[in-house]
Amino acid sequence: MPTARDDLRLRNEAIGAVLREAREKRNLTLVQAAAYLQTSRQRYAQLESGQSYLHAVEMIALVQYYGLNAQDVWPELRQEGTVTHHVVVKAGPGERVQVTIDMQESS
Image (tube, rainbow, N blue to C red; front, top):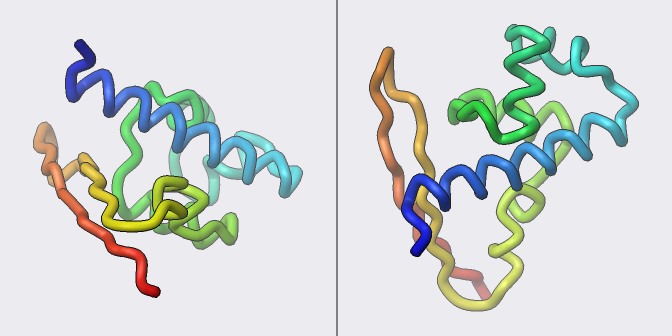
């Protein structure tokens, strides 16, 4: 049975794939994307591969930088009804906070 950690890893990989595709569509290198985020090329590569957690402020910055929307990052939003997301963000050194977001499509 998959654990929450497995779900988070898979979600990180999916988000990373979206970010990689957006970067490549804009013909940006890992170095350019990392410089925008003020991180190393190695860490940015880890974000795209799902090996490193993306901080909430980094996610917001990259979504804006690449011109993405919530449906690009969370394709589940395209479904009708309520969608629940569990997002883990870094709160401080050695601390993580899980945020649960329930979203309902408007008609």
